[in-house]
Length: 365
Image 1: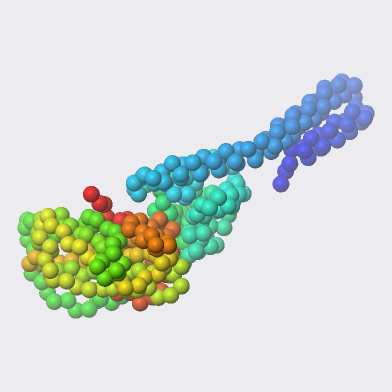
Image 2: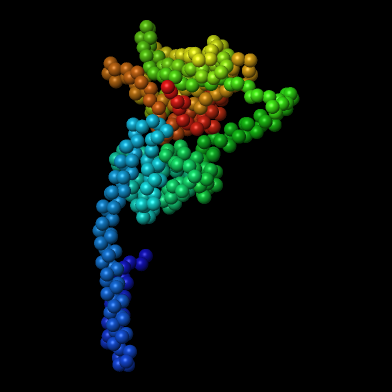
């Protein structure tokens, strides 16, 4: 790589050579002046470059601080308004000088206990981002959607990035989408019973709508730990039946998860709520991850409606203190938890939901 110092040395050598070389008198003076002027310009260029190099650590540190401050400033905001590390890197991508500075920033962030988003992105296709991290960040910055989280960054990499085909092939295999599509295609090819065509002008069938109203942890009279989820029917029709799946596992994810699936025919009328409770005589005291998924059928309907799976973290039991609050998982925790779930026996409806969900919790009131 060309360095300014070599320009200075070569221009100096060139000027000295012209000075001592016999030349016609009419050309000698202007040629020597031009040679030494070129030498002076090279010296100034080298000095300026040297000054920038000395100031570079301060520039890198300032950019690192801006990224960190942006992430921390949104940490207490509602989930939809938070900006993860990947979102901050994208926002300031125009201030990175080169790929090397991006790598330096990622290392520094990890040392400060921040998640390295490229470790998640590269888990499916590590070679895709080799010497392309800055390119990815700048492409994402000019995308038509604002990318704030690792989930939306993965979506961009799979669907819209210029190297999406390279990333998609490996990513789809890891996430299990190919297998799911094969199952859905096979099901679609099975003979279907003919159904009457619905007139175009016939109004759409009203649908029920269950939303998460409350969630938490309690202790029952038998001194069991109970996890509860209160679902409210905000739709215009009664909910006739509900299928629900509850999955819990310690955050270490070293053993198969505990899965609880049930169906209830107890109706949930419009504007009312129903509490689903899962109790355990003994639960690990360690921090645990939880997935909660429901599908439901409205009155006089056969079609099952569903919500995206909801993911929570329970901080467990510390001493004699039982944490009674469930917190939403961060994007990187959701990704690692869902990849873990795909490797174990979970109900097929939940498995399908894991592959199609947007991984955003239902709003609460």
